[in-house]
Image (tube, rainbow, N blue to C red; front, side, top):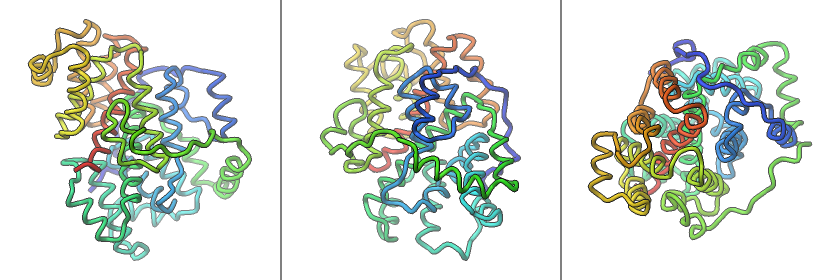
Length: 361
């Protein structure tokens, strides 16, 4: 059985908040509630936009009911105290009864759900857990069960984006949004349920983007993984995150690509492994150096301040929250706050990208 909310051990925040008045004003303009995580990821533009999308993305091909259930199941499977509590509370605000939420989180058979919806929840759990990742057979089963290719693409994206957000908040050890959780369980729940949609209705929101085609999505880092999302705004979101992640930052491009390679190899993804290898070859590493780095989790080509990233990246694939938070805090003491925040973003995005690559299985 998946872990329950009160069973998750959580540490104090790993990094401080970084108040960015311009970013917070932009979030208010978009009509979203500013959360703790928004302030902790504010220094990195691509990372804060990815976090925003994780909370604000509106599915095109999935009913919101299933989408919200999938969000909660994903956070539960990743043992993310921050996301699990906030998503659970948001479901209450939307009117889901406590009894229904408990049935979902305890993974019990529910009369309220049909076979197609149960298959969706099972797939969410499987992909979020990825021990091992779902493969072609699982995708075929969803098709046989009545889901379209577009729906499966959006399901895989939603779970992958959830896994990215879960890792960001877990690795940062963001303090739970307990005020929101209390309000969602109290007499103001109905008022919240009325106010939140109203805020979004009158907000300007983020400018709409036309979904990119497969050729546009295929260009750039890990484009082969993103291309199956052609025609969905989900593809734009993933491409923007990947493009931003591999631009100049506190970490070298080689270190980032090696972190992706470590996560790919740990999860057994040949597509992401090949994409990361091509990037490393372009950076001047040869095949022997790449294989040695993946075998030893050390690479002499990396700067001294980046030497501990590979072993830590491997540990972000499967973890117990308080243990990985302790490891992350120790890494931060070695490399500093700026590099640690970017490392958290890269590791989280790598875990999301490898999960999304199941669409290529």
